Every structure is written in C-alpha cells, then in structure tokens.
Length: 508
Ligand code: SF4
Image (tube, rainbow, N blue to C red; front, side):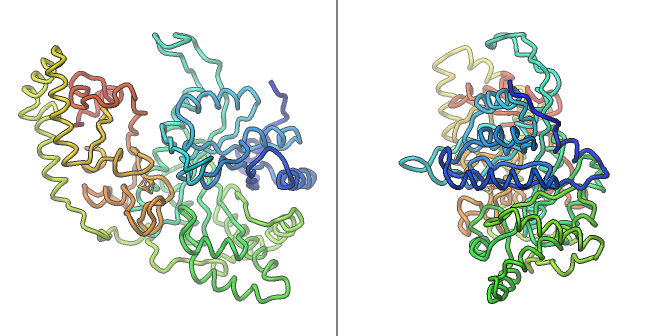
C-alpha cells in the first residue's frame, strides 16, 4: 500500500476560508514519452509554487485510449500533491468499477470525480464497445456504500463479509450551460439526484456565460446544498476554440462572440496569448466573488509560467467586478429565471404518453382494474416453460412494435414517458441525461437525433422548472434478466420496482 501525505485537495476544499485551485492534466496514449515528461515537469513546478491543491487527471478523454489516471495519479501523489482522478463509466462495467475503486483505495487515491464519460469514438482496429453498465448516480451510490458499510450479500462470492470502510472523497459534474430549458432542467434534476446519492462536491462543466455560472451558485443556495461547488475555467487556444465553436466537443458551448474576439486577438504580436490568459484571470476573480469554493482550471498549450501569470492576475483582479467583461452568452440560451414554456423541436406526441399511461396504470398499478387478473395469469404462466416462452414472445412482439423494445427484462418505460432508453439513448441512461447534448441534440448524433431525455421531457408531464427536485434513481439493471419477460419479472418481484421498495409500483 502506498504512503501518501495529507489530502491537500480535500483539506482545502472543505475549508470555507480557502479558494481551492485544481489543474487538469490530460495523459496521452502510451506509457511515457515527451508529453508525459512535460506533464510531470509542470506538476513539479506547480508543487513548488504551492497554489494548486490538486491535479485532476482525465480518464480516456474524448472516448480515446490513454494512460490510466491511476498510473499518473501515483506519480503525482509521490510528488506530494493530491491527485483528483476522473472516474468514468464508458468503458468499465460495475465489477471493473468496483475493482478499480479497491485499487484506488489501496493506493490512497481517494479523490474521485465521477462521470459517465464521452461516448467511445476510437479503439484498436475499430470503435470500442460503449459499456455504461452504471450511470454516475449508481456509481456514487456504490461509493457511498463503500464509504460506510458494505456487506457482501449472502450467496455472492465472499458472502456476508463486511468490507473495510473506504474514505473516498467523490464529486460529480453538472452543466449549467445548456441552451434549452429541457436540457437544463434535466441537468439540475440529475445534479440533485447525484447529491442524494452521495456526491461530496460539485465541479461545473466549462463555459463562458457568467450568468449561467451564477445561476448554478444561486440554485445550490436555494436548494440548501452545503457541499462545495467549483467552477471549471478552461483556457482554449484559438485552434481548440474553433473546434469547440462547431459543437464537436460533447456538452461544450463556445459562442460566436468569443470566437470572433479570439480571432481578433490572434492578430496581436503574441497571437492572442496574453489576452486569453487575462480573460481567464478575470473569470476566476469574478467566480470567486460569486461564491464558488474554487476553480478547476484547464487549458491547452499552457506551461507553468502561463498558469502562474494567470493566477497572479486573478489575484490582481480580485474584487474588481469584471463578470460582464468576460460574459459570452449564446443568444438562444434559456435561463432558470425564464418562463418554462419550451416548445418541442420536433413532434413529441404527448397523446402517446397519455394512452400508454392509461393502459399501464390499469394493468401494472396495484389499484388498476386489470391488475389482479394480469398478475394471476402472469404468475400461473411461470409454472409452465412453454407458456412462459409464448408469453415472452407476445410481450416482445407488442413492445418491439410500440417502443423498439430490446427485452432487457427490467422495464423502465414508465419512468421516461414511455420511450425506451435501451433503444433510444446510445448510453442507455435511465436516470436522466448525460452532459453531452448540444442544443437539444444527442452527443452521438449531433444535429441529427434529439437527446432521448429532451424527447422524454416533451412527451410526458413536464417537471416543474421552478421547483426542481431530485428523482428517486433507478438502481443498476440486473443483467441476469436480459432477454426475459419484464412483465413476468415485475409481477414476480424480480425487477427494479422490488429493489426500490414499496413506493414504486408502476412499471411495465
Ligand atoms: S441521448 Fe441524451 S443522454 Fe443519451 S447519450 Fe445522447 S445526449 Fe446523452
């Protein structure tokens, strides 16, 4: 087990008198080389400077393979600085996730930033298989259990064994920078749900709209959220800004006005280098005034001299009220103080929600007229293998036609306005969206397919955007039920409704 010093990140972030600064490192592909040497040199310089309290380390960013954050995390830890490991779920199933949590704990790598992750785009001889076995709410729940008391279930390997308490410090991400009401309301619902599942700190998505940054802080105050919130400040080069402006980076909005300003700055002798650093410094000063507990800094082509200059300037600008000077909104952005009156971009067919819900309530709700007979017939069917097969085939036929059903065996249709997340969302998100949508479109099919959760928002009864609340998260899917009848699983108490207790009786 490795020996590490004090957790500088946790200590700083939990001290309300401190303004915590972290810096994001992006390990590349391969186990060494110039890129890694440069990263380690930057970390050495930062350590000597002392203002950066943690290095956050990305986990296969952009869905590309890279050196694991654990490996670089150990190097950083050996220098005496706290690593903050990104822990994404795009390419590990729940068992691998648990195994890596054990590894992190064994090496005292306790600071984790839990995220779903970008959809895999590349891999050895073809695109990698997207996993997304758990979502971020479900992983946070697992970590929460490990932080307190995790007793292995009877019948499982190592049964009835209590695991040692693992004192992780796990945070989550939220984007306040969504363009549409439907995307934004869902982001905030999911944030509250992640906190309910055990998130201990929040880091925002990167953005350039200062009113949106403020909106997030105000929301956390309104909701009496006491965990610290950090703002993500990214310093893009002109080349990266151009890419971000096209909407090709999942979840990132870089408005035309900022790009135009950067194009003009590129005419300067230094190609706009100082201007981009000063802009970030002013942002940091303004975010500190808003009440953020710290900043999560990142950028491309930044050496430590640039970072040091930027941080000096942020101190210099402290209290100068510069938010307006660095405010770059997208003109079509919806804000939380606006009316909740978004019209769907495409047909939404709320009639399908009403008709499905009417039938569903009669058959699957315990107070429904058809519930007793449906339940009795279903349970009788289970006694006969042939009838069970016939019943399953019948269910598949109906649900494939109506909902593009994939027969996952644990149906969540009624929790997403009778749209199927298994076939409708590339990441199969069951507890609200990921952070990758842009202007309502899915990160995997930009400008082509609407995000599944945007469609769900418009089809079913809308959540009240003035009183945003957490949802009761759906637990991880039991893959033993795959290709079996979800109706039989429901009536025989095998699906997630049973797992969630008495409150959730509706499912089909
Ligand atoms: S449909 Fe929405 S939630 Fe699913 S991957 Fe696309 S953007 Fe994310």
